[in-house]
Length: 400
Image (tube, rainbow, N blue to C red):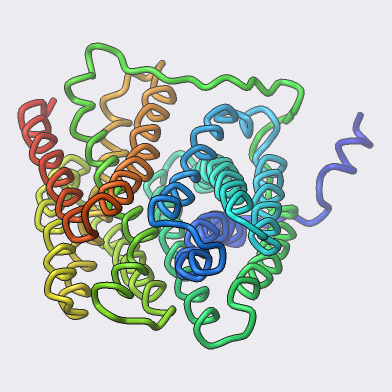
């Protein structure tokens, strides 16, 4: 048995800062796959000939993989952080290969579902790994690393994909080739990163999602749940529909523009998360909800005015709201959840986020096909603003 453990454990292990950097790269690389495709949606639409509704459905398929990842919510607690992270990278590599060789719409659906599964696995594993690497005394540092690298990965991948699609050959292939090389390099780093689970055993894995919402916290849960729903809806709007808006409404045909706008969003979110770490979580969440109202309206104003400068300003407001809300709402959920049901309550919160990332975008796609994109986006903005008002009321009334 000792010889078997020696074979499984790398002789050289990354420690301390190097280990944190490796796990941060895991999260950035994983989340990067979700937006690598963003600047390519219009090319796929022309190549495969699908409608705006189909585009939003392809994007939303990602949430199926996210929810499926909840089945493996405690896999890394049993099998170990390293092995689960490598399994997540393997799923991401498979998803990237499907995109690379895509020959039709069905390939895109499968690729999006697998990318959602791989990202869900990597996210749960990576964030738990970071918390253990920094130790009990500095859990806040782990949260900052996890959330900021998450959004940096989203932004850098979108920007790179847009630039390559516009200025390099093979617009539908080159981004995924580079991604595969990066994923393999990250896998090598993860293989030599210090394992923090004592005596991991894959045979103990239980495939059972655990969701809960105790009655005594239901009223307090409304505000953070809607915050997560709303900010993920706004991020999903950018990640799926912004290239179409830039092309059709602002008449910007450059494929790099959509990626650049998403990069601005992600960069500002990461900076806000780092800059406001001392702000109380509930205060951060309430400010996010307050900003969500003008943020959603500003997107429509930019679209109607066909102004790039207004769109850039709107993106900054959306990003500030998302940065405040992402950290604040999750911390509030951790605070209100009973200790013995915290993981299940947090999983319920993430389901709200996944639904927010998918359902409103589908609604915009359906409504735009029945009316036009401007009316659909106005409806989207009104719904997000109304939800934010309701959440603000609950957040202020149920403070304890």
